Image 1 (cartoon, rainbow, N blue to C red):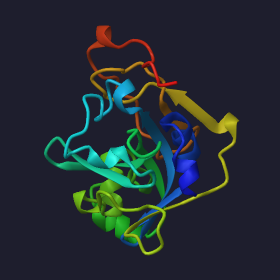
Image 2 (cartoon, one colour):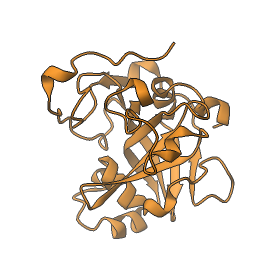
Image 3 (spheres, helix red, strand yellow):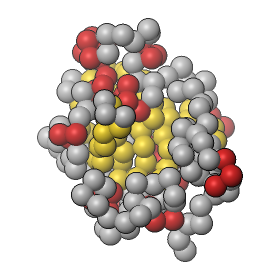
Image 4 (cartoon, helix red, strand yellow):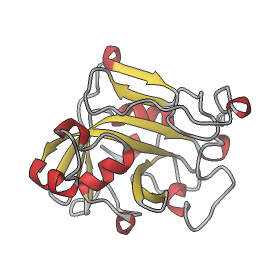
Length: 205
């Protein structure tokens, strides 16, 4: 996947990432579920209130890995998109482990099945051994500790879209995309504050 591909808006990039592979620490996974977050236009985005030391990577360049710590115990990984200074990212929600299964199982010994290894953003990071130390990694550079590789586009009739999972605002925005029928796709869990964000955020342009 080229930088030009990832410099697209988060919704377009999210759709493109389905079926691509992510590799780290001897484990490779095929991306099956993603969520788009669109910077200052999106109240659910980490960049909604501006630049901070935590979200700095989301401001570019595209093709970097943005890793954050959540609930005091889990890491979640995002692919940075858009252009320099214009923040946006795609959360990697789920993936099918396609290589390095033994290592992924060792990383996630409590997983009930192979399909469960990369189901959910925190589980996916654990299965691939991705931590905050990988924040800012260039996903497109040979030799990077975390590598993103393009794949043929998933057919439109296999792609589903719906609300994002567990966000406190913007919970009805249909910016979650997944491959229909994939066992690794996570279960839907609606977030809170229903009255605050029932519509799609107003995007730039």
